[in-house]
Image (cartoon, rainbow, N blue to C red; front, side, top):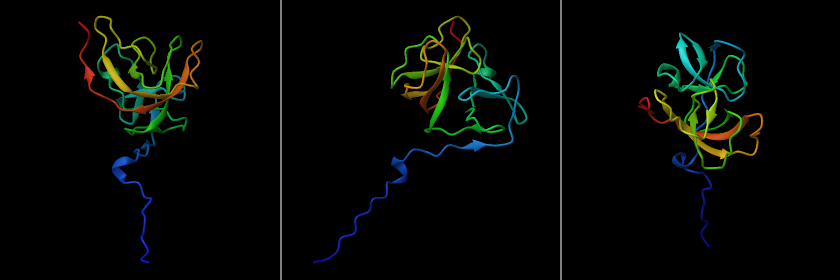
Length: 150
Protein backbone atom coordinates (compact mmCIF):
# COMPACT_ATOMS: atom_id res chain seq x y z
CA UNK A 1 0.00 0.00 0.00
CA UNK A 2 1.46 3.41 -0.97
CA UNK A 3 2.19 6.00 1.71
CA UNK A 4 0.26 9.27 1.45
CA UNK A 5 1.81 12.41 2.91
CA UNK A 6 -0.63 14.80 4.49
CA UNK A 7 0.46 18.36 5.08
CA UNK A 8 -0.81 20.09 8.19
CA UNK A 9 0.84 23.37 7.28
CA UNK A 10 -1.62 26.25 7.11
CA UNK A 11 -1.20 28.36 3.97
CA UNK A 12 0.25 31.81 4.68
CA UNK A 13 -2.85 33.41 3.16
CA UNK A 14 -4.97 31.90 5.95
CA UNK A 15 -2.80 32.80 8.92
CA UNK A 16 -2.94 36.00 10.93
CA UNK A 17 -0.10 38.44 10.39
CA UNK A 18 2.60 38.74 13.02
CA UNK A 19 2.66 41.99 14.92
CA UNK A 20 5.30 44.45 13.85
CA UNK A 21 7.10 46.10 16.74
CA UNK A 22 8.78 49.36 15.86
CA UNK A 23 11.52 50.12 18.43
CA UNK A 24 13.24 53.44 19.15
CA UNK A 25 10.03 55.41 19.63
CA UNK A 26 9.76 58.40 21.96
CA UNK A 27 6.33 58.83 23.56
CA UNK A 28 5.30 62.47 24.01
CA UNK A 29 3.23 63.23 27.11
CA UNK A 30 2.55 61.13 30.20
CA UNK A 31 3.95 57.57 30.28
CA UNK A 32 2.07 55.32 27.84
CA UNK A 33 -0.49 52.76 28.99
CA UNK A 34 -1.09 49.32 27.50
CA UNK A 35 -3.32 49.55 24.45
CA UNK A 36 -3.25 53.29 23.88
CA UNK A 37 -3.43 54.48 20.26
CA UNK A 38 -0.75 56.80 18.86
CA UNK A 39 -0.06 59.03 15.84
CA UNK A 40 3.28 60.30 14.54
CA UNK A 41 3.91 63.81 15.84
CA UNK A 42 7.60 64.20 14.96
CA UNK A 43 10.69 62.25 13.90
CA UNK A 44 10.46 58.96 15.88
CA UNK A 45 7.99 60.68 18.24
CA UNK A 46 4.39 59.61 18.84
CA UNK A 47 1.54 61.27 20.73
CA UNK A 48 -1.81 59.90 21.89
CA UNK A 49 -4.29 59.94 18.99
CA UNK A 50 -7.72 61.59 19.16
CA UNK A 51 -10.51 61.95 16.60
CA UNK A 52 -11.05 65.68 17.16
CA UNK A 53 -8.61 66.91 14.48
CA UNK A 54 -7.08 65.36 11.36
CA UNK A 55 -3.38 64.76 12.05
CA UNK A 56 -4.01 63.27 15.54
CA UNK A 57 -6.67 60.93 14.11
CA UNK A 58 -4.11 59.16 11.88
CA UNK A 59 -3.35 56.22 14.17
CA UNK A 60 -0.15 54.36 13.33
CA UNK A 61 0.13 51.99 16.26
CA UNK A 62 -0.81 50.63 19.66
CA UNK A 63 1.39 50.69 22.75
CA UNK A 64 2.19 46.99 23.52
CA UNK A 65 3.58 47.62 27.04
CA UNK A 66 7.16 47.42 25.78
CA UNK A 67 8.84 50.74 26.58
CA UNK A 68 10.13 52.52 23.49
CA UNK A 69 8.17 50.30 21.06
CA UNK A 70 4.94 50.62 19.11
CA UNK A 71 2.89 47.77 17.57
CA UNK A 72 2.24 48.79 13.99
CA UNK A 73 0.94 45.61 12.33
CA UNK A 74 -2.40 45.11 10.59
CA UNK A 75 -4.59 42.04 10.88
CA UNK A 76 -3.11 41.18 14.27
CA UNK A 77 -4.69 40.79 17.67
CA UNK A 78 -3.76 43.53 20.11
CA UNK A 79 -4.90 44.77 23.49
CA UNK A 80 -6.56 48.15 22.86
CA UNK A 81 -7.52 50.64 25.58
CA UNK A 82 -11.21 51.68 25.63
CA UNK A 83 -13.02 54.57 27.32
CA UNK A 84 -15.17 53.64 30.34
CA UNK A 85 -18.94 53.21 30.20
CA UNK A 86 -19.23 51.03 27.10
CA UNK A 87 -20.97 47.72 26.49
CA UNK A 88 -18.55 45.80 24.27
CA UNK A 89 -19.36 42.69 22.23
CA UNK A 90 -17.18 40.50 20.04
CA UNK A 91 -17.58 41.77 16.49
CA UNK A 92 -18.10 45.44 17.41
CA UNK A 93 -16.39 47.96 15.14
CA UNK A 94 -13.67 49.88 17.00
CA UNK A 95 -13.26 53.64 16.49
CA UNK A 96 -10.75 56.17 17.76
CA UNK A 97 -12.29 58.18 20.61
CA UNK A 98 -13.03 61.87 20.05
CA UNK A 99 -13.11 62.58 23.80
CA UNK A 100 -10.23 60.62 25.39
CA UNK A 101 -6.78 60.85 23.80
CA UNK A 102 -5.25 57.44 23.09
CA UNK A 103 -8.50 55.55 23.70
CA UNK A 104 -10.94 53.62 21.54
CA UNK A 105 -14.72 53.27 21.57
CA UNK A 106 -17.37 51.21 19.83
CA UNK A 107 -19.42 54.32 19.08
CA UNK A 108 -18.56 56.28 15.93
CA UNK A 109 -17.87 59.99 16.59
CA UNK A 110 -20.85 62.02 15.45
CA UNK A 111 -20.24 65.59 16.57
CA UNK A 112 -19.51 68.42 14.16
CA UNK A 113 -15.85 68.51 13.10
CA UNK A 114 -14.95 65.07 14.49
CA UNK A 115 -13.23 62.38 12.42
CA UNK A 116 -14.38 58.77 12.09
CA UNK A 117 -11.24 56.61 12.22
CA UNK A 118 -11.91 52.86 12.36
CA UNK A 119 -9.30 50.78 14.17
CA UNK A 120 -10.56 47.21 13.92
CA UNK A 121 -13.01 44.67 15.29
CA UNK A 122 -13.44 43.53 18.91
CA UNK A 123 -12.23 39.94 19.22
CA UNK A 124 -12.67 39.38 22.98
CA UNK A 125 -14.14 42.00 25.33
CA UNK A 126 -13.82 39.88 28.50
CA UNK A 127 -10.93 41.91 30.00
CA UNK A 128 -12.72 45.27 29.58
CA UNK A 129 -14.17 46.87 32.73
CA UNK A 130 -17.14 49.16 31.92
CA UNK A 131 -16.83 51.12 35.17
CA UNK A 132 -13.19 52.06 34.77
CA UNK A 133 -12.34 51.42 31.14
CA UNK A 134 -9.49 49.21 30.16
CA UNK A 135 -8.31 46.89 27.43
CA UNK A 136 -10.04 44.39 25.15
CA UNK A 137 -8.59 42.19 22.42
CA UNK A 138 -9.03 43.73 18.96
CA UNK A 139 -8.08 42.57 15.47
CA UNK A 140 -6.41 45.69 14.07
CA UNK A 141 -7.85 46.77 10.72
CA UNK A 142 -7.33 50.46 10.28
CA UNK A 143 -9.57 51.82 7.58
CA UNK A 144 -9.76 55.13 5.86
CA UNK A 145 -10.39 58.18 7.98
CA UNK A 146 -13.72 59.65 7.05
CA UNK A 147 -13.75 63.42 6.75
CA UNK A 148 -14.93 65.64 9.54
CA UNK A 149 -18.57 65.21 10.44
CA UNK A 150 -20.43 68.24 9.03
